[in-house]
Every structure is written in structure tokens, then in C-alpha cells.
Image 1 (cartoon, rainbow, N blue to C red):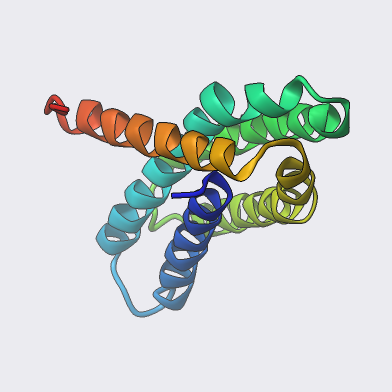
Image 2: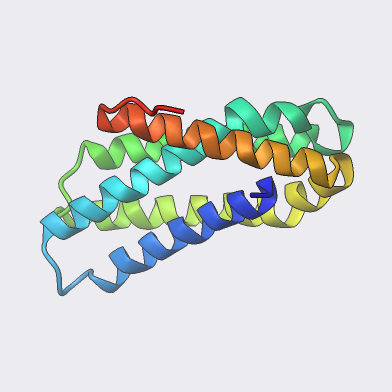
Length: 156
């Protein structure tokens, strides 16, 4: 899959998880929130890892995208900090939902910058073939990382 399509799909998946959590504020248990948060956390962490290890190095080399990439890395650190704080809190704590809202705003800001700035500039820098190859590399790395998280080895 094309790298920009793959990353966009990740963005959509994360937005959907936030929407699920938000819709369950009053009607579901803390256990359900915790389960959805684990899913959200995993998706955000895997996404950031493949971007920082595979995607960003390609675009950091180019003047047109270097500053966007540097800003994105700073945003990843902020998102990671918020994830850590949330992991240390209980989902039934009222402060947890407030912190989750802060995380959602940071993620939405980050996604908007990537979708509106990095992706259009990136499409000018790399060819369709390179974007396809980069997407395949990202997919393989995410599959490998998921396997490591689950305790199973991925066999190619």
C-alpha cells in the first residue's frame, strides 16, 4: 500500500477509537475505556515508531519537509508524554477524561499538519514507486512490531 494512504488509514483508525471512547463516556464502564485506551495507545505508539524510524528519515533530508518532520517528532514526544500520564491514571477518574481530551486535541493537530503539509510536500519529493516501497516497508515493520508486542514471532 502507498505510504501516504497507509498513514492516512492509521489516522482514520485512531480518530475512530477516540470517537468510540467519547461516545461511551457516560454509558460504559471504566474497563471498556481501559480496553479502548490500550488499543488507542498501541496504534499511536506503532504509528509514531514507523514514522520516526522509516518515514521521517526520508523526508528529513529535504529542505521542503525538514521543518515539518522536526515539528512532528516534537509532537510525538508530547503525545507520548500524555500517553504515559494516562497509563498512570484510572479511567474512572474524572481527570482521566480531561487528559484524554488533551491527547485527542494534540493528535488531531498532529494529523492535520501531516495531512495538509507533510503529505502534499512528500508526494512532490518521492516517486509513486518510492511511496509504494516505503508503504510496504512500513506495513512489514508494523506487523513485526505487533508480533513482538503479542509475544509471537512473525515468520516471513
